[in-house]
Length: 353
Ligand SMILES: Nc1ncnc2c1ncn2[C@@H]1O[C@H](COP(=O)(O)OP(=O)(O)OP(=O)(O)O)[C@@H](O)[C@H]1O
Image (cartoon, rainbow, N blue to C red; front, side, top):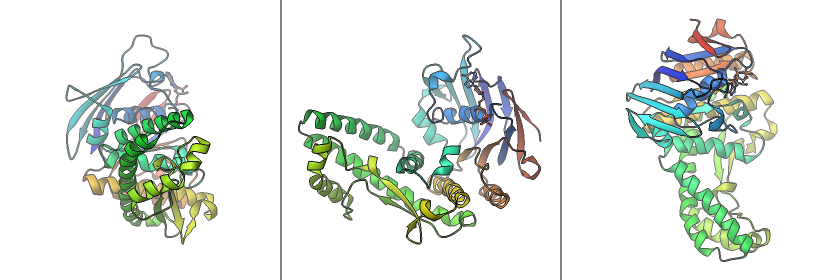
């Protein structure tokens, strides 16, 4: 799908806009603090994902204009056509085709993926980044995924409280087991698709890459349900001693390996960045393959640490995927950019060519 028209009002530092957008690649070029990330974020919120990580929706309305309504409106075309609007105050209110809707409906109707500067460190550091990446992909691929994760987290809190009180946790374990097994099945299916997608992004990769799920805190028995229950049994005392939940998807690791070794440990920094971008492209491919809809990609400052060759490969691959893609940059890469170039200056977004 593509976002054909976009209207923005009262959104952070952005001036009111009404813009026509083409398909294909879009570069948003401007100085630091110009509003490039804000512009991507407005689309991210419209497509049901909320503000970028760590930011609160209450901070979105422009600080300088009192009592102005904050909204983002978009007309999407492609596999489906629809008009959607989101009004933002302390919360977000969605309308699709004039009728009340929700963020999760938007996420399912208009598949989109965002990739932020911190995602460039996807293959290194702790597992929570990789879980967040796979969760975002699963939330696009499987309509009930986001609500199941929400439910699972609620159960985790209940289990923790029960462990603190030293009360019986067998009932909460039983309810958790169903969610845990389902989340594992979704993550496994998403990783199967990612593996196929990585074949399409080979050019970016320095070597063969494999991705696999290591179930959190389990004994690693083949059957996930048996794995859950046997591990719960095996670690019962430990859970009670530490009063924390050891077994389950909240402790999963997504292993990214090359020739059997974790790439975080031995790929160079640049090659780790390329691997992260290859995973992002593979995720887009997975969405298109499963949903038969072209995703919209929002990429914030992803070219900053790539060498010239890496940038050229990335742009060539994005061109060949034919997804509508928005890329921000503070570096002047406009001469070799093959698509539309937008200049972002003090909150004003205008088409350069
Ligand atoms: N609610 C708000 N109202 C008005 N201005 C805001 C609001 N929230 C953030 N801003 C301002 O928006 C400005 C632009 O931020 P943004 O992150 O979009 O810049 P950017 O072009 O992506 O910059 P960089 O290249 O440094 O990443 C920031 O300077 C910030 O102070």
